[in-house]
Amino acid sequence: MAINHEKVAPPPEEPGLFHRFRARVRRNPLLNTAWRAGVFAVGATVLIGGLVMMVTPGPGLLGIVIGLAILATEFAWAQRALHRAKTAADRAKEKAFDPRRRRRNTILGTLTAGLLAAAAAAYLVIYGPTLPWHIEDPTFWT
Image 1 (cartoon, one colour):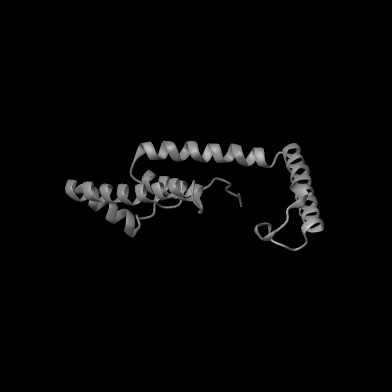
Image 2: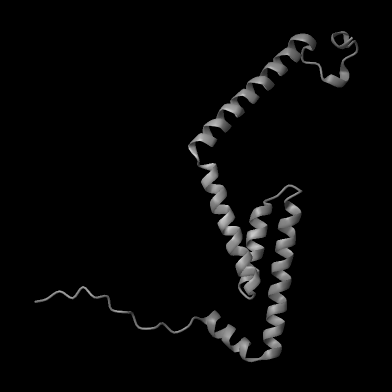
């Protein structure tokens, strides 16, 4: 009995419910335009939200990537931008895991924490647990 090592391709699966729905929408020009406008509105909103979160508190990069992923479902330019963003993220990840940079950042972080602890200790020795705006006689500064 011979063993056949060749892989047999599985029978093609019938498209899922979403794929059938999307194919039906594509056949109607008005529905297709409305669908694409809706995808653009949602994707652009999420993308702009991500850009705003870059300067305000929030997960800005995540919002940008999700917005581009939504737009990439319908637009080729968004697919290219998403590919570039993924490539840049991979490069940043490689830089972050570089052992020399990691060691340097650990040393710098430890030194900074030590300097801040020394400054806090010096403040407590000079003024005690008094808040800076409640100091009545700042003799140390004069």
